Amino acid sequence: MLLKNEIVKIEIVDITDEGNGVGKVDGFTIFVPGTAVGDKLRVRLVKLQKHFGYGIIEEMLEPSPDRIEMDCSVYRQCGGCSLRHISYQAELAIKQNWVTQHLRRIGGITAPVLPIIGSPQQDRYRNKTQCPIRDDGQGVCLGMFGKRSHRVIQCTDCKLNPPHFKLILQTVQDFCKEQHISTYNEEKHDGLLRHVYIRDAQATDETMVCLVINGDEIPHSDLLIKQLIANCPSVKSIVLNINKAKTNVILGKTCKTLWGKDHITDILCGVKIELSPLSFYQVNREGAEQLYHIAADFAELTGNELLLDLYCGAGTIGLSMAHKVHELIGVEIIPAAIENAKQNAINNGITNTRFICDDAKGAAAMLKQQGLTPNVVILDPPRKGCEPEVLQTVADMNPQRIVMVSCNSATLARDLAVLQTLGYQTIKAQPVDMFPRTTHVEAIIMMTKCGSEGEK
Image (cartoon, rainbow, N blue to C red):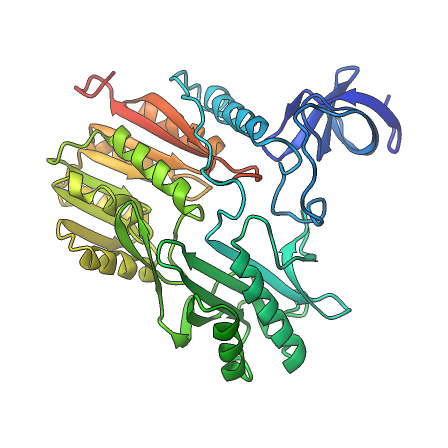
């Protein structure tokens, strides 16, 4: 029987989709964070359950060949990266296995899983960051939440962010210290500044700074504006987001422009995209272009189709395919995102589109009542996946093909299993790494109606 605080020798044989190494002692599974497949370790057991336990590294006996030198001083404390200690090729192999195993074990999917496509950039690829700002008892602290906690780890230069984000974050942090701006306290629900949220349009070199506040205005905002535009010339928009709710949700529903434009404009797959603070947009622009090209290939568009894009956000994925279809209908629940999508279509001269503000379930049901029968449906749901009613309604529309884009292969596998009971078969899966050094991975799935001409 193993005991808490006992030290055991183990070899890491696998990595979970939470980033923990897996080892065994006499058949008993031990999860160890910060490890790599092939590590041989002495591990201290810190938590024991009936069938598994957790340990921490006590001594490295023999490191894995996958290990690389650490290049981040806060990696062990920060909750942003989980795979920064292994080579990128090893990371891709792990993510390929995650997607394959989820599809097989959860969904019973036997379709081919194509070799994973890596990100063009492994560092500095993010076009968005949301940094909590708090008083840690010794002053203003700005950075990332620690792993499994709401303790802020001071870090203004995350290696996943572009270098100029550091200038913005340091400017805001210095401003708060100099002007005695209060920061949010989650337990007491007081203090003003909650998060610093930055968006970047990499194709146009436009940056938006959004300050999430527990109030209506920031004192001395004119001074902050001057400092931001002086320190970072790419800043074209400075916005307040009002969030007075006692919640862990980062953004509130109301935005107020302090200076500049209320949006920034990026270019993705040749389409100009207007982005407001509330718009969904892929955080890895170059990776997203790869992702959307594959999705278009899977859709097998000929120019005659009605394409339904559920969970369309600012319309990015649908608009990138609009020139290949007869008509595009996009659906999104966030009003600001739908307005962005409509404006994006106008700005690009795309006239064969219609965008509906509703949840996917309600809009799909409405379109079904109107007798619309899309030839292809694009599903790009949040991490929780699709509601069963949405999957049923989509199947009832009888599209020839369904292309699903997912950042959670576990819920993806669950949804595919449901669609397979509704008359669709999975043809192929393509993992795409959009989030290097983290435990997230994207996957694109092609499904066809059983017995249809598109069946492979």
